[in-house]
Length: 65
Image 1: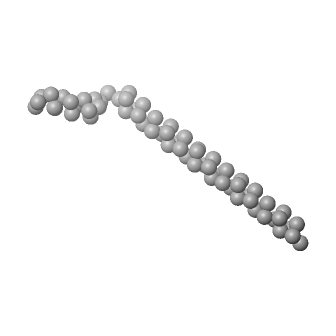
Image 2: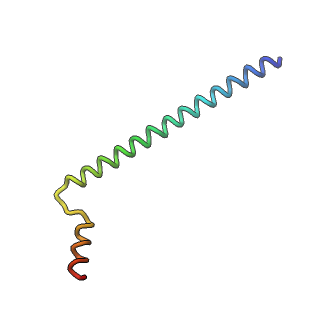
Image 3: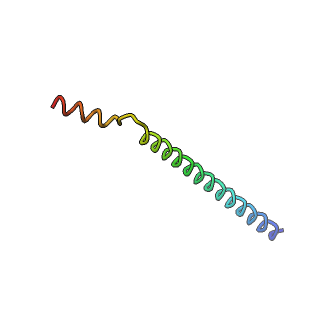
């Protein structure tokens, strides 16, 4: 009777640990996708022909200052 309780509790712990690992793996995958998306957007903005906003602000500051 008591041995069955120990076996059942060890199975529960293993299942909980496995689900924790799956959740951590999914969070890592989401972070990787987010970083790749940000890098793609930054690369696209850097390769565009438009001037960055900071260059415009520096130009306006120089003109008035």
